[in-house]
Image 1 (spheres, rainbow, N blue to C red):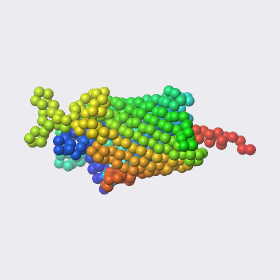
Image 2 (cartoon, rainbow, N blue to C red):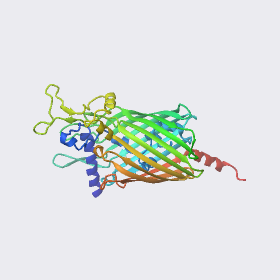
Image 3 (cartoon, rainbow, N blue to C red):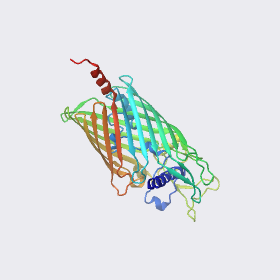
Image 4 (cartoon, helix red, strand yellow):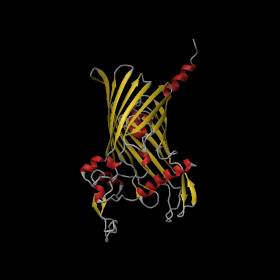
Length: 414
């Protein structure tokens, strides 16, 4: 019973914030802006949640890390540089466990190299938001529903040279938060859908000498979730279009020991909420001729996709200093012993006025023949953080090793 109540409460909060908070431009007063609290909200934010344990243990870096079964999420261009011919991964993340016990993110992905220079891949991301109970204005139960969201990807990656590749992923997104429930004000709701693309670029240098050791430098640039707006009723909202830039350095100490250092920066390509003029009662002032809210700082966020992307670089009400605060950064470290055991750590930072996500991460990885297991743990800096105790689990599959194992088993014994 307690689980149902908590799940209902937590899911209701999440759904209300997504449907109402994201569909209405955020209103700020000058006094509120002086504290620079001005977060950017979008529809379907589950697309930005780190799905896998490897990157999750390294501060959520991924644009320039080595290719693996989860590369479609981080940088689709990496697939062409995958060392294995094919691979797959299954990821499970219990989400917001401090608030709600039944929210989970599932991510299944895989790839196959169709030539030495080309690779294809696919992935499915499913986000279950637990259980929600609908009630009428006096509190009578009118229905039950389990909100869910998913995204389906198809990907292609091509080497353009020995050290450079590009990739494209096409994404279908569906977000069903209400089950077509009619709100108390009579407004009908529906599932939101969108289509989007990821465009990625990846640089993987040849081995070179660095302090007497072999090294490989990497870099990545990704434009993700570039696509149409989502509508749950009438208002249409931006999806989390994002720019990710990363770099990395892999040091091969000897045949057993390898170190990797990686870093990413991220920026949402979505308009920043402006400041609206207030009347004497504290309500938004309306322009009598246009019937629109009067903006005193910033720019109108109700624009098209292309204009919204360009506008996102210079529309913060606080000017360039606020624009810089909209850039998140993360750094990560990975150590491999004999390509069998890995230790990872990282740090993620977001400005206090843009969401205040600040946390350390740690994790381990094991590889044994065909299978691999990765785990990651999130350690927030602030107390009573809803992301506290977040665990991620990843099971990987190496199909090359599976085929090799079958061939060895088929050989006659001597």
